[in-house]
Length: 374
Image (tube, rainbow, N blue to C red):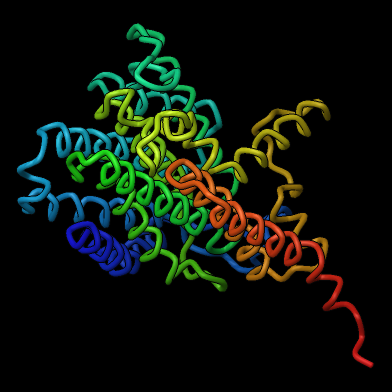
């Protein structure tokens, strides 16, 4: 655990320091978010936060290579992490070009497919679908590649869609990464296998990069992550889940905290991770596609009807809207991770209490603040 904590701190510190450099690069290249009708900021803000986060992830990886805990583990741990970071660099560079030149949606999609194809070319893909216990459905390479491509590209675009308020995307992904790290570490401890996994390494470094970036991105933001950051975060988070399923046997992922194989949730979590940890942005993505296509518009056409816009409409401030969406993301991410590892009334009671608190803060808090004091 101490090794992972060090990687978290390295990623956070390097990202924090490089954010200043990324901001200067953005200003000199003209990569600036100008004020548009659908935006909530009222002055131009530089892009390219993705460069700083990529630097933080790279620094954590270099430190990990010097740690006996990770360097002496399975050779696939550092090898797969390196492949994911190269794919992240590819998609980050596509985002940098978009931050500067505003690429069209089809070109950005091509960049996403290219980065995902790089992962698949180096065997970062799904290989089986667990069906509970020690049984599983073996995928042929083309089926695994297709499933991997769909999940990675969907996650990349989900993070991109939710990047609409200061600190929103970085906070949601950081929470999801921490929740998945808790799952990765817990499942290895329960099954008494090597704690060193690619998924744990990537997820804890990703969480650190998000924290380091949030210092500069919290409202009022001094820098936006841009597409260079949102696409990078989506790819690394989804790829970490894919890598976990490739480094475990199906039966190992089905063991709960009591050592039983009856729960399917830990079995399927590595496959469903992008859906569970990013349920909020994915729901926003689906509603946006339906809304725009019903109106006869392109599903990629921007508008001002995302979930964070609706929270602003019902009376939340920008900061409070972000915190509300963080609460929902945390409830879903940590709830799904802990429910896959633990059982009992205390666990379900905690989740129920968290749901009630989150619902109250979402819908009742704006009304209470509108009530004039007597």
